[in-house]
Length: 184
Image: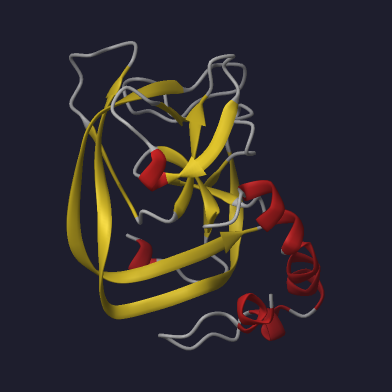
């Protein structure tokens, strides 16, 4: 659960290009953390393109969050979650049976079958050094609204500061945007 994540935790991640194998990346900050606010979320029902008989993967994300959709040429394109439509393909670094991908193996393409809108309590925007994290088996960006590559570039100074003086970066109060995000 996102609410259980803490700065310093290592989470499953991958590059925005979906490079395999997946690796672990440290959460070094939260750009936003609102544990007591009710917000709209999208719950996406996804199925494996390889094994349609497996149970659906349920991926829950805010509409403004950046996720990676498979393009026509197979590349991963970052888009707003709200821009996804039924039939779009998302990337999972897991094998179709839900086990973690091993070196030199492909992940799984997940096909969007259905989207529900629901209200949930809490908003969390953990940022990893890799700029991505796996949420509900789906590769997602650490960023919202602004395209992934632009956000990752804009946060380069914060990543550097997190390595030099982590206590300056880790300052965060519930309900507030991170000081660096406000400055941007």
